Length: 487
Ligand code: NAD
Image (cartoon, rainbow, N blue to C red; front, side, top):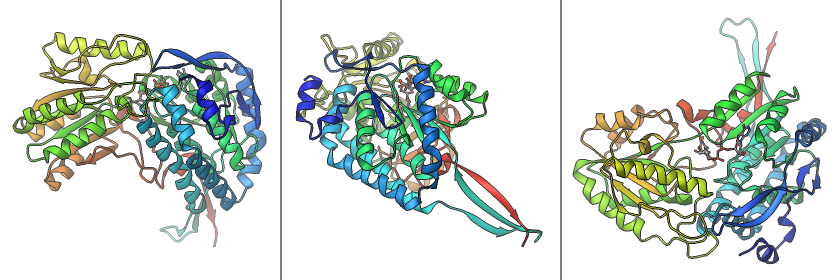
């Protein structure tokens, strides 16, 4: 399927917008090819923004800032609500676009559009409930009044694995807070970001409030924006490695940073777990987006008494998945994002196999065009294999056996990451105890899916700083101002 045939089927062909979007104007350009990972073919070409383009985007965001900040919360809320409605109305177009440029199965892409649009609905609601504070000091000397103000121009950088949701999870709270933004989506999946900007335009987002630019040189372009004193916020979602680089860069101008970084989620199954529920949860936690999710279960620790039944059940379910192009409605597991991603997964699996692991299904990349790696289950994996310490970002489920709760917790915490974890047991007291001892920002208890716009999403350790979503997500885009009031 080509982008042309897709566009012909769009309810609004203008959704295939792909020029730089700066100050409410579209600027055509080229330089970055966008590939279809299902076939390896080129889908489109998008502009490669220069540092000068980025500075024009900062100027546009600055020109719109005062007006947007002064726009009543109710009005900001209604624009976000219209954007939400438009996403729902265009959900099939958006899902197809995501499936084409990202490769994920259409069912996953539909799920993403629903999840992504909910951030606009949630923050349309939160825009009108920005908290404040008024109380006496303990000494009675004066009154404390705390107001929250928009932090200012925000640079938003997003990854390719959730091209819609990672953008709305930032744009929603930023706009609700009264900030103007510059979004830099991943070069692999820019078409969804541009389509979303088009819908924002239709929803009535004023010119300059949301700007979108794609660039093949994210380093210099981002550094230039961070060096501009008008930019006060960086909200980044991506790998821990790039996050570290950006934190160092932001330090130069002391720009406030929210960081949603990599994960290495442990998935613990205790002997007393409901096996079918654990397998259902494992399939969701592992196979949403074919494993290309920061919350993806990366290490399955299964207690000795249930281990063999779990491996058998998981193998059966993983082997039954239908692999194919993301855009085919029957596909359950689409391709990886790039050839390089397949090579990385292949190296991790080969290393584990060389070190004594056994693949009960899968275990090698699939030949042909497109970037396919089959669902794979590995058992007897040494706990110090590279695959236990690196983010796999693919459909591989390494299973490790454990005996005691203490051992499971020690293994779960043996990582620099701390984004998500899962525990399956019928004993809720044990689940909560394990939860207290696992170093994680989020824990799924007898549940393989935790993402929810109304919940605080984020990690501890080197998985990030700050939280997105929930009632606190809006505060990432606000500064508290304290007034000491003599009364
Ligand atoms: P990445 O870090 O390679 O890229 C993320 C974004 O940063 C892209 O837009 C990229 O163009 C940009 N970028 C790269 N180098 C840059 C630089 N020097 N300066 C500025 N921007 C730069 O990550 P990816 O491969 O796109 O995404 C996968 C990673 O994202 C995984 O590690 C995954 O766990 C993580 N992720 C985390 C969350 C979360 O909420 N914690 C969600 C989704 C993905």
